[in-house]
Length: 149
Ligand SMILES: [Zn+2]
Ligand SMILES: [Zn+2]
Ligand SMILES: [Zn+2]
Image 1 (cartoon, rainbow, N blue to C red):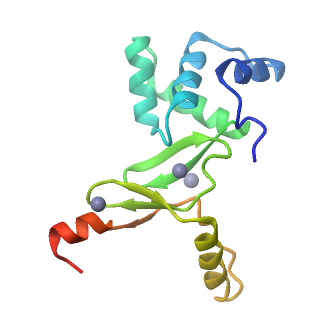
Image 2 (image 1 turned 30 degrees about the vertical axis):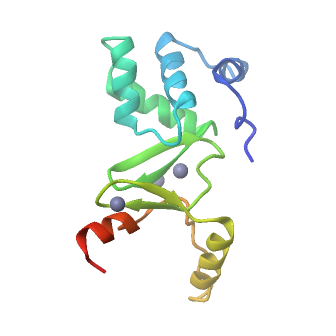
């Protein structure tokens, strides 16, 4: 999907340098956290991990770097229960289903996603971006625990 999808940290750094960006140790640490994360990672989690390795790095530096990496197409964000979450570019193209009680995450299949987009499209030809915001709800396990159906 994306040109940077299968690239590791070193390839990404080479590509950023080729675009004229200076790779500071902070930027390298931020890239390592986000590109090695499994699934999503929130900006505060990136900031905490980088600060654990490099005390003195400002959270705002981390957030600015995430925005820069997103503008350049290396990462993307979507909105979940607790705020924005980042993935590598090309890995965020799915409809997130997030349980508001236990935080468990799931995603629609591409057929389900297309069916949902078609359904919404019947409403005045509205074209939804289903991947940008997660769908909040209650997972099956939590419904059974609480006996609320
Ligand atoms: Zn957004
Ligand atoms: Zn995702
Ligand atoms: Zn749940």
